[in-house]
Image (cartoon, rainbow over all chains, first blue to last red; front, side, top):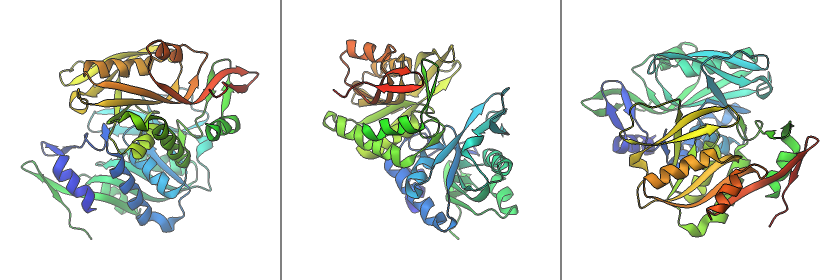
Length: 192
Length: 192
């Protein structure tokens, strides 16, 4: 998506070989007009899937997921992150390992918000190693709901998350796909 | 706001004398169409204030704040919550005590996202004892920015947050104002 790639080139900050900081429009300060455009693009890409629910993980996933929810007019559920949970009776939970922070968290969604009739679209801000998305897929499976696809704002294609999803034949749409960082510059994948 | 009061009556769950659970449309599962309507109402109430920035706290504040940002077409910044922070050089921080969880957290906003020229609108999902809002006001003062107002989705008027803001002559607009919970029923304040 050219609008997003241009914004990443303009405002993104490359830190080392693997980190892109986009805290001025995506995950600390948020550009609402850009979010709206991203949400509409997710809708364009997944509108034939009859999505009934959008899932994401707090906090950075909430903005793009809500924007998508506005385009689909379906509820958005964000999984809560916890260090650990004792009471689990009415929750679906999954373990998510963060390579960035080198810690494991549990994510949880109340069971009442996910049913076997749901056709789910997962939305997240970043796809790197795919741990958060895998956790949400685990939860969708626990609920016997259907995963219709995964929509990502920024994918770092050189990390393993995209490959894992492709191997499982999951429809994955990333609005910006980063091939590599070269000398502080972002190199995008060619559009298919 | 009648739309919101009706939704609280229909889907809200009163727990004891002080707690209202609205996790089916506001702070776990989110109704995007309702958020859009709330955002437009905040814009209607504060459109003469020439707002340049909307501030909130993760995670539950993000959805109504983003919806407001879409109506104002200005950036939304959400403060991050931390247990404690060591590196603080480029952050504004404030201490926020949670009466619900009985723990203190620090909230932080990167200094680069708030300047003396900013006219800020604080948006949050709940106003109870006002601790989160006070923390954001503290940060606005550190940045020498201007606080133009506070927009709240649900106010529990019987707790002290609203009184604290009124005493400081801060323009505060709560879209639903709860006077009391009586036998599991929500009693709203009369509209002014």
